[in-house]
Length: 602
Image 1: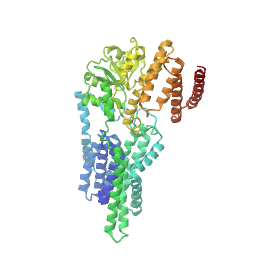
Image 2 (image 1 turned 135 degrees about the horizontal axis):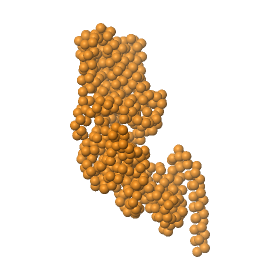
Image 3 (image 1 turned 60 degrees about the horizontal axis):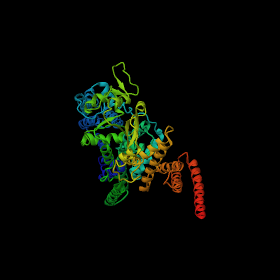
Image 4 (image 1 turned 180 degrees about the vertical axis):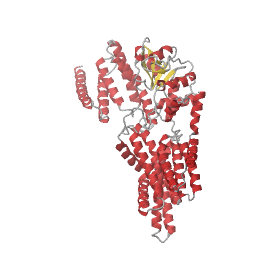
């Protein structure tokens, strides 16, 4: 596209190289997501716009307009963010055709026909929803309202990234995008893009109109997205979600960078006698910049041995008992486990039910028949079980558990906080990353549960190995926290006031032993383990159990409270923790003096 715009091959190579081998583009080109295809559509639309700009005759402009109208419609079938570019391009093209007196009713009807032809892939949603054979789907498109709900993303939030998140301000997001752009596609791209604008408008060249269009597209999209991106980008995971949408802006910047290089070298060429020398310099510069870009990002983007999310989902699936019901919550466990279950056929005996989807009226209509053996006491999940005026019957989690009491039920990861009805009849017991919903009539046997859940997973990834904005980091953290979930549960249970002292003592001992085991096995581990283990040591000091040396408990409490306090500086309890460390040190000295006195007296 840049080579077509500027007539320079090096311009095209530089633009393509800077964009294609940037970290974001590279990473998302090897992931099963919408972004790569959206990138292709954006490039196609911009390339067709350049072709329209270069067209000399009415017939040429008409031909390109038709192709462009079809591609505009087709691109909207993939990702809606492209609509902002589509609006700019359509307005610009129709304006030019109006100026050339080529715009008529028949022309508009023809372009509209091709545009709607591009939208035809949406018909698959209607057909698929009508026959209802898909084991996993989203929405009911058999009605006009259902189709519009899907097209407008109403269940996620129209023109928003999330339904109910409070994000960073528009100004902060936009400024972060600009700074991010400098590191992502290098300062070279940003500098040459700015140079393209300066040279284009000072010289008033023939490309000023299309450069203005591309600049408008960049600014319009970036500002609108910054306004509607309602996620807090100070959180690494949310930043990882938001930054993917900046690829669409980067296409424009890289294209203008290539154009800027061509204009700069053209300006230099007019001032130098040797044109071959300037051409040689241009090629050397382009190859050097692209090669350096590849070298910088290759190690980050080489995912040939990355099976983290796959292993995460496999571990959870194979840890489940036969014929269990798994209530899924969240993108990571939901999507990864569903893929292995539905697409690769793993654990066909399990029934995977999505918690959030159960709150939508269409979910059970579309998927209930694909969940044999799972009984739903109504049409959708709601904390208040009622019959609505339209005939819809809602059910809560307590009802769902009651009608499926013959099957073991697990939640992964966590339960919807809006429905506490399950607490009347059930408890949550830890099961690796997940929890098992157990009837309150079942008596908890700590020793048996520790043996049952002690070796659920085979997880070998190092803690803190992955970028915090990645799903791999989330999966790894969940697996690491699973190692101490039972210890935390036992400790929390021991804190219950209604338990007898002997039961409390046993639970504290089991919790302490589990914490000590994992901490001794893993030198590098989550920071909160230091604090939790130190607290477990403090509780053990109060129990005065035989076989547990209080001196070792004090030493471990001091060591791990100190380690936590030195790392978790944002914790509001740091002052109290350092006071506890000071107290434990005094107690340790007192205990050592008593032991020394006892040895001397002996």
